[in-house]
Length: 589
Image 1 (cartoon, rainbow, N blue to C red):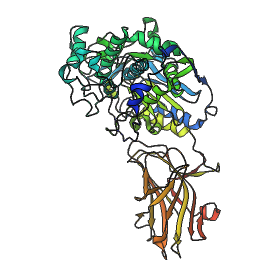
Image 2: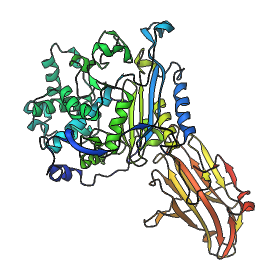
Image 3: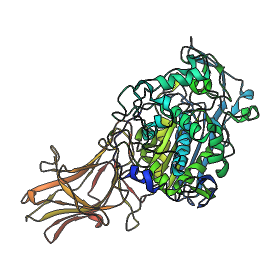
Image 4: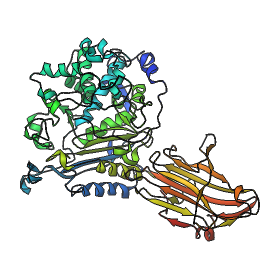
């Protein structure tokens, strides 16, 4: 199924990816990375505390997820889901909610579902297998990078060099990298299921002209990964499902991950959609145990863009493998340099569409507050998602049957965002002194202010000092320093400077910051000489966007001086009591 709507701003840079893959990466690569010895950390179940996470926010992750079993806003967003979250080698949350199979049909006239009797429903379980939909693209991408390591595939080579027939209809210049980063120019989707034979369907892909010149635009397209499948099968002489088994699932012990699950798996698989026209391209009835995507179905269930079934634990193993640099236990499926390229932005020319090799990067629209310039992941149309954040060593899996009973019952990615927000909040932010700091929260569509009492400066050496930590939705969530000389009737920006550990001072002439600051504390200061011989109030104002937030902002150690005289110091209880906090709270994490 063609990808869901994407958005957001980005900040990553390329830094030599093509050169690394063009030569140095191939030199000395083992012929079969899947059997190379690794030393990767493996997963175990454990408490939130063992994972270095805050348990109350993991509990909130589950509580928030349960709300989407009800009207969201009119119908349930999903019939059921499996949630898995962890940090380091510890899976601190693995919980199923709702039902894997709840409905038998959808009635389009009344917009209602025909429900199974309670005794015949199948509850979701921790090991329930879900149709991953477009998460399958990640596996195809990993298999392609394995072939790049072995020298059988080159990132900047033209696809037509491997598949001459692919060069038809203006695609002669399309490269392997452009397939992996959705910059080939392919349209997002075409109905392959209308063709009579398997070969006719593949010919439709070969003959499809670009919607834009290759390399000039970002357009998410299933056809990219279908084409990459054809390349992989051509250069290896093996079908994609065999490559998946031998290259990824078998060495990693992912026993519940595969294409075309056997009939014996059906009771443990989540059902998807009552697939009928006009909302589906094919009349199939309630789909259960077979791939939901129409194009993947007509391609025999094995396709580069969709068709993989898996469970939450197996996907957590994959996430841990990538966080380990390509190894899990004694198995290695990729070299660390390859994993780095999976998470490196190749789409710097297309802000908002940051993309590694197969992986999407820094996307608040489904990652929520887990989104950082280092975060990688993907979604699937059926309701699935994976997010991996190397900056905090965390991983999140949400598997849901959100098209059960019909795709029109859900919209957006609110459950994914809520889960990402909760896991991000579960990663504590500690002050240098271990005490509490002012925290502005993580609610969207809000404005929070932290206002200091009025200070009068008798000299031209007034100065504000503090420690500052911020991570906001870039360009949308902003933290601003402002001043007022008329008891708060009007406020004007105050330029300030920040200094990160080991970095150079950075000026903020607009008096505000936004986006990613590296998840470290910065020393901040502002020159207040402009208010000599005047009484002035200072405040921090944090404004969030209507839908998404980052991890938030923290302020600590507020101090105002006039030359050698301290006018305000929040370490003094009497001064601290005079701070006016609207939407800010004291937090030790």
